[in-house]
Length: 179
Image 1 (cartoon, helix red, strand yellow):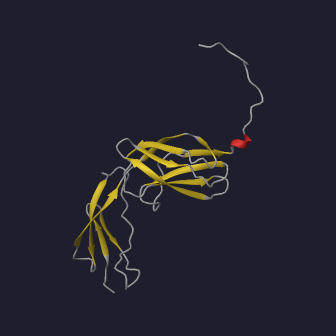
Image 2 (tube, rainbow, N blue to C red):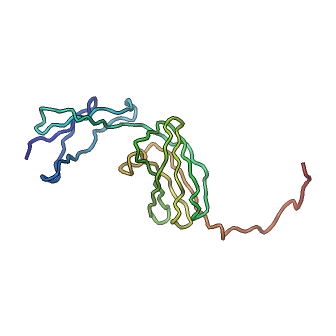
Image 3 (cartoon, helix red, strand yellow):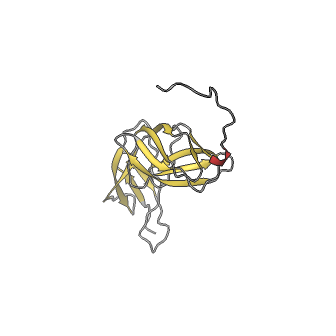
């Protein structure tokens, strides 16, 4: 027992942590609450085994505020691997971004790797190719799925459909001029 194992998120405060296994050099804790109106960015992390003496870790934790405003397309054929683009602001590329598709009817969840362009505010990922037809809520995570989009993100939906269910029964008008 080392005492008060603590991690300091410089500029945001200290949090109590735990060492889950004495044989592993790993500290586990939660990041402190940070208002979505705070300054976003990467901030240094310091570690203390006694709660008093902190050592710079050389690591930084990124706090970000992001919002998704829209997605395109709104639908795709099942199994197509269609590229879905989420548009928004405050996107960050932490190297482990994923889109998470949650089926509204069943609650089943599918993940797909996302390519993020923080400068243009876009995240692109494939529609799930092994998911059945239905409506899916689309969320994005910039940290490998550890945290999904904050509550202030808009609900973005993707409808997967079976192209075999499509049919045309009428055409009106039946012709038109060449222009």
